[in-house]
Length: 359
Ligand code: ATP
Image (cartoon, rainbow, N blue to C red; front, side):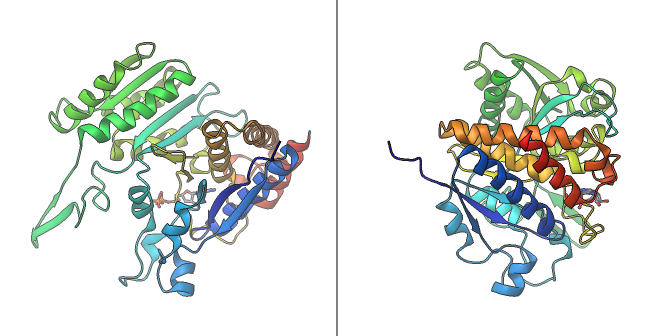
């Protein structure tokens, strides 16, 4: 019997704390992979501010092509707001998500004891549409979804397509089938009768393929309130791009903050991109205190995804091992960073995860 080929995983550090938490994720995943006998070829690729200096562009020619030949990749947070105002300094996020049609962003929120969660029984996943909606840097084929006809007037275009709505809905229903078989559609079709109306229609069209999943609807402003009051009553939530962006940060606030907010961007094929919800946190970059959980958990989600897609038990075992290591580290203040009521440096937390994986 021939050994399964190595998984080829891209590593794109991103900016600021990305240079700390992405290598930490590779360290943890490599240790788990070695223990489970899963070969991984890590492929470091230039992107972001460092690539502007080394390759003259934040999204260098060649990076997209190289990614297309991989099984998936880890993308660190991008600090594009601080890029110099030159044409070569673009935000790589929308380019990556559009180019690979990564239309669904899976963002789980989960309680852990002792880290400052509002409740101890939160376990939900927000599935955010990734490529249309209000985001002007990705919702048009060319040009920007925002424009200013005169100096005192700005118009922002929101794009909702039936196909885009159906695609993200299908991804959400599939996840709901692996959990409690309950899906909450979040929208505001009371006001956005056509836009949110089409999103809801698209979701119900897909619902016919999943008769075993119960569907409910919540209007987005009510959802903002209910996420705080009774988050434990939700399981899988699907929503449009901007609503999902806002609600996932709110959800992170329930369970210890942005350091606890992982994410995985998926599309139709098996390629996926691990990407934490948070930004590049320049205020804490270089201090050794950034919480690596969100990035490591995003990486774990990538391997779990690939394990299922490629039917690789070793890959699933490596994801399970990473899970055990993180559960162990999060249980002890000595192996938790200060944002989640711990006293550890990032390095000490990573060591705690590594030790926990060996138990
Ligand atoms: P973006 O708009 O790019 O998502 P943002 O404006 O939401 O970025 P972040 O960079 O995510 O800003 O940072 C928001 C706050 O959360 C900052 O105070 C930052 O230090 C904190 N933060 C973000 N990520 C982490 C982390 N991994 N560990 C600890 N604190 C974090």
